[in-house]
Image (cartoon, rainbow, N blue to C red):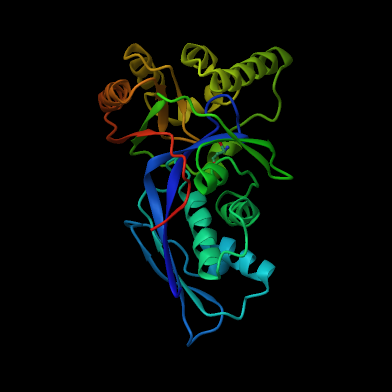
Length: 311
Ligand code: HSE
């Protein structure tokens, strides 16, 4: 094989109840990454980046999330001498809370691993993808990378040891994700967070997380709805998202099970128990943003179970 093209899905991290330890993948949007053997060169090069609008992404391997992820993998495999050209086709906005940099990193390691005959398992590629994403936001957390790479709803017991677990997905679960035309860098959204959580707040949050996981295992969507509350992060970050309270209220009024910030924001997600409700809740959320003069895009999707796919 001399060329591999992959699709890496967008992700919703945190999922209201699991800051830095929970995330799920959605069917679209996502990034496409191409890795191609180049017999005339040595080493990894980034040869094409498209879909970035008026933004610039670095072509220098060591400054690019996909480049770093692929390079660390090649070093691990002892294959840095091999000539590989990488193309990155961005199909989702930056600073959107949809895991854009994580998708590029996850896509790059799968494409390069496949090009070399798939020496490593999907799970073993996680470490290299997280190293890539770390270039973008400065911190080491797998809550976007893991679901983009392996699909589904993923729980991370420990970001240090990358002990990750795929959780069951209730059959009817659908998600509406609304991306408002506001840009928030993860680095900035992390900077607003207080390091300390009061004990009563921690207790409520632990209850939410535990009952959310219980709801997934018992296919209990009403319990899932009652569990989907973020007492720690959402109150601190919501002021970065114009109109957030009204957008959330709009989703809940249209029957969403729950609604919160997707990753570091500004995207907002709502979990629903049918595709019809997700579409309706998403449109109401868009209308609420519009009342604040904010344009937005809506994505309605089931939970993506595949993760990165080879095209
Ligand atoms: N858990 C991360 C955060 C996800 O909320 O900062 C964004 O990369």
